[in-house]
Image (cartoon, rainbow, N blue to C red):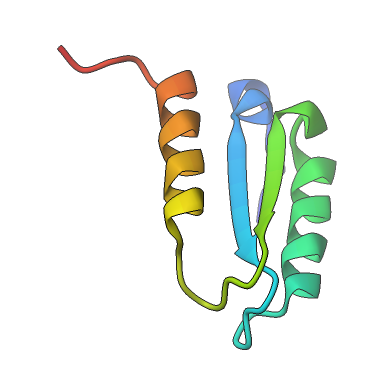
Length: 77
């Protein structure tokens, strides 16, 4: 696929991963985040892991997603 350029290099990214995921091992999440950091501004890439979380989500993860959205998207009136 084509290179990322322009404003897309500055897009903020939040990647979340459970450390007990049996379907997508944490190692693959780590490799993915490193690839992302090589493609866009690495300062804009956040990788969060969640202890004990499998291939699912958690309240802690959803709170992190909410904070990320609140920080990067304009409020809805």
